[in-house]
Image (cartoon, rainbow, N blue to C red):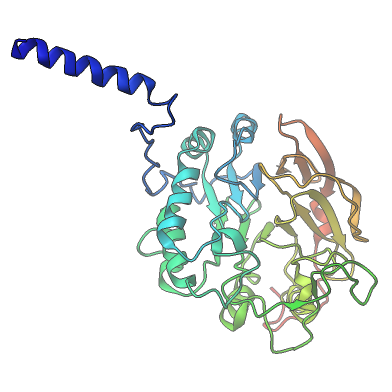
Length: 384
């Protein structure tokens, strides 16, 4: 047999073996798709004189699941989009894994398209901060903050890179139409949660994973952030959007909320009154459902808390008591919208929850004149 013929027969035998390998339970090498690289988002920056008319927002977007909702958000053409937290589900102390999951979000085609057309501001909640229900005890919080700033392209001069915590504030629009965006950090400084009976009841008779932490030294925002917030509430603004990853208004459910620290929510209400900060609307996420709540005893005017969750992780139906809720809940995929009508004789904000296809599920209109603070209330620096 010639050397050429021997080579041909050997090659034929190898091909035959490879073709039979799967049937024989043998393993053959397969191409492995590489994960997308971690890189900063190419985020649009809204001009400071931009008049905000349409602000969209949402929370709870799992990077491993399809995210078709971005199409409806992009079609709305909002002036600004707010990510309220759980922007990814990292749930890790491994910072390489966290970067990888941010990279998955960045590789979502619908999200990239939104980033190309709309400015985005973000805060975090527990799953993108670190782990489920984590607070100040999360050991990788400094490293997580750096990754957050890197992904959302915070410049080197950003206060978010200079101090602990990612709280921040932005103001858009001219006088008379000035919108202040207050981004709270409810994770970095938060004290321990007090566990209840997961399948039992809290003191009010409702199921509770967590009950109230009555230690008045415990905190959600921490001293530095509280001092900063007091300053921000004294800045002139015609509308304030306060971004809290967890609900401010809801009280009965046993999961994370401001009322896990009753003295902290009371401090927030007292601060709003003390600074006479009018026209505040809270937007929140976390709960894997959407609803609109109203507190009538927190400020000198009704304080609305519009909760939007989840972008792609709805919870399914179950009954959850919320005495401050207006109307009903919405439990499928959703995003929130605030439409601001500056041009009518009586400027109005429309608080909305929209479905996966962009159609409204909840709509509630509020005249801005009903959100004024009491001008006779005492103020630390006198009248403004």
